[in-house]
Image (cartoon, rainbow, N blue to C red; front, side, top):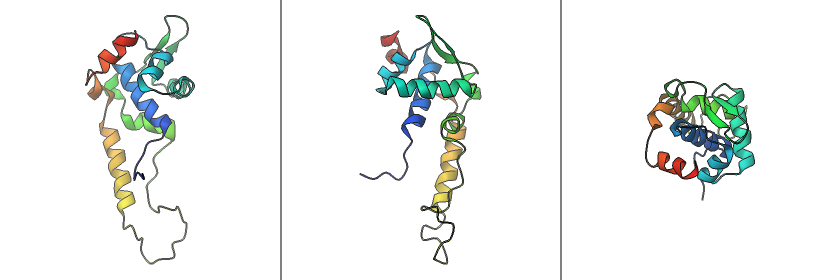
Length: 145
């Protein structure tokens, strides 16, 4: 089945991991995050190292190692996480990225641009602090720690 909008696996792992890390009282490691998110350990490790490089996380190796936030959760938006992984969101125009359109006006109107702007605005307004102790996240983490 086709989806109009979808996140890459890396972006999904990044956002979900950051929310798990935000809700963890202690450092949480790749193995626990990959088990909770049902994602490849290798892919989780790669995404988290990217977020370390971008200054969102700190990491420590070893038996008591893991990841923790480097900045307060109210200072980190989902947009910042998304763009750290995927790059800046570009304004949407043509679905086929054609430099020249054979038609006088876009057959899709400006829906792509509107959807892109709404998506960017939504992610920008969602801070990690909004996801502290939501749903069953603390219980999920506790099972693995």
